[in-house]
Length: 309
Image 1: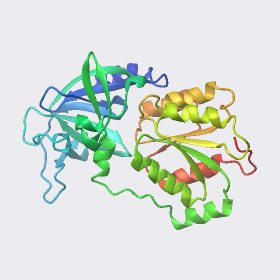
Image 2: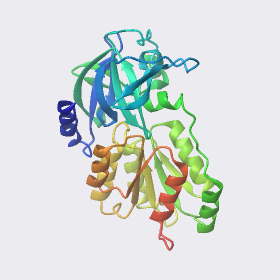
Image 3: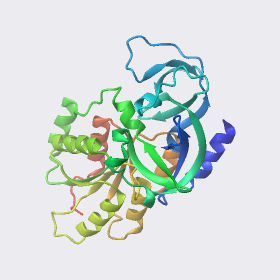
Image 4: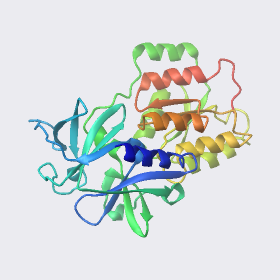
């Protein structure tokens, strides 16, 4: 475990420079898959598991992990492979994201690699990965599919996207019109959730699908007439082309963009993420998806007497 964490810590030094550290693994054939190392706590041989009758077919069971009972998700089933729940050679990849700890069964862990964010791109439908792969790249010539483990987890857990009545009243009291916020996320579902949340707050949104599109749009808006700009950016961290860390760093290094408030909004959590949020000078980090907490953060960052950027 110590050696693993040392390797992860070395990889985190690349974050903020549009470099991504990923753990590669296989699911029973030659296809390589990847996951951001910021989400991975530990990789181990499959431990003894308890069955959970009546559970979702993706749930292989539960197990004891360092004194915690955690659900074990059969990632092979989620990706269309034969189940691994009864395979004694399977490995458990313990992850922490979306404020939860869970395990994913994988066939064969490979190695840690560094990827250039510019080389991550959305997979073409013809590749056949479906919605559970949100990016592809190449490592040493081999195609790597980046698994959207957030989407897998979301398919098992209902997500609250509505502001509570008290928070809606607070937002109306602040009278946020005509403020505009930029929402940056490569997930259509996440973008729609955020736009819906800001609609409940009477805040207009400008939308971008990744950090590069956001940066280009922000530079355009810096030259736009008064009333057409934004005051605050709410950005995902894991995105193709330019990630949220690199976007924040670019905003801080661009004089005309520097006054913007930046909230990083991601399922990634843990000490490495907290360190990177400080390193790139983001104003806040809010874990996905906590509508009231995100709304409260936005209210705190938007000034009472404001000049739209």
